[in-house]
Image 1: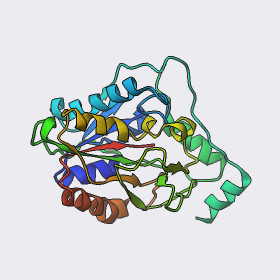
Image 2: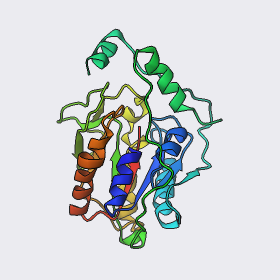
Image 3: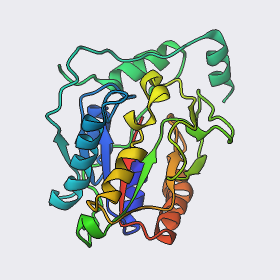
Image 4: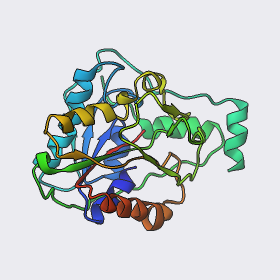
Length: 102
Length: 162
């Protein structure tokens, strides 16, 4: 995805990437990145939390205005409020067989 | 809490399944296009890579590899009309409220209040994980998306990896 943002930016359209995977985003280096330390399925927060969803979205929009150098990654201050772990998904035998065929 | 180290976690997971280590692109610089207008004049589009498709469209392959499918998302469609198929992350919250990962309703509200100029005619969902043939993103699927964004007069793209 960061690679796509780079291609779009090169084509002349500004991009802001809202990432929950800090280390991956730091490697790929999209033009402008915000890291939000939330679970990967929740970059804008929890279901029904319109205030938080708006807050993160607004931070992304504002960053398009305030960012001044390419490749910068900013850590947003919002906290998830509880520990969370990497979701390992369903590595079922069926899923694995499908993967290995590709 | 400390950020999760996904590079290690993902390679541990897929290494245990017999995959070679995935090497993300490493860049020490980035391209740059300045925002040309104030936000209140900008047309804004969203792009998400979380396996989200309209209920009337085919589901994404939840275990995708090298899947360059990109769907246009109608921004005026109710946000409960989508399905998520992606085994790379926990989308149980997003299943209940799409705005957790693709804030279509929140963006529309910001357009209604005049904070942004307009919501783009199309949002985008695609570029699922495990893309080993990245030159195709650089040379084909990425530029095709950029051309579509230009056709829609998009001034700013918010990209959401998942």
